Length: 223
Ligand SMILES: NC(=O)c1ccc[n+]([C@@H]2O[C@H](COP(=O)([O-])OP(=O)(O)OC[C@H]3O[C@@H](n4cnc5c(N)ncnc54)[C@H](OP(=O)(O)O)[C@@H]3O)[C@@H](O)[C@H]2O)c1
Image (cartoon, rainbow, N blue to C red; front, top):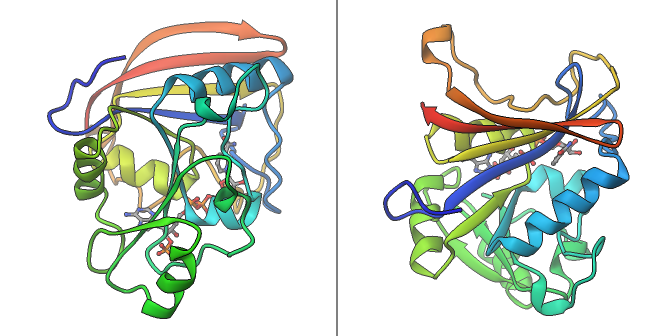
């Protein structure tokens, strides 16, 4: 794992999806990975400097984003980063527990009252005017010493990070399930491109089985 892009962390997008590309059901249920894959994910968490998610993932899943499925201690937990323009992170979120340091990244839209409340439990960074400026955020994190970052969704943030050319590598767990639902979140939602020529291009690296799941890994070659 080494930074290929200048001045930003080496970013691995890691997600689990069903065979039909869904990261969650239309109701938001997202227990997709088998137990072997969860161990892979927690090993990867232990390796990286930071883990980042979008605010909707915090609201829907309430993840801890710590290393707890493998042998580890509190010092193995990476920095947690939440992309949250309007400072909507609920104060009761597990991501604000004391198991690891957390950064909430807001934009200039966030109300100072919300920021003050969150400030007791997390570090607040302002990046961007309306939505979070992801490129600027990656530069800021890099300058804070974050050299490797694992992007753990959700769909909207995955798309933004990919289309802005910030992701170096993609690792996906494909579970042998089909859930359907046009409202169900996919690996990358967001605005979407109109033409295949504008797709984010990938180079296959490897694939292997873990229990019933298939893991596929790609290098991102262009945006
Ligand atoms: N299977 C898996 O591996 C996996 C992993 C994670 C999540 N999930 C699922 O994914 C779903 C959540 O995904 P989601 O797409 O709704 O939300 P998300 O990607 O978690 O969060 C998106 C939100 O981030 C904020 N944001 C701020 N700046 C942004 C920027 N520049 N680009 C993109 N987003 C920005 C926006 O809200 P504001 O404007 O309010 O800031 C945006 O609506 C849940 O159902 C969860 O279970 C699945």
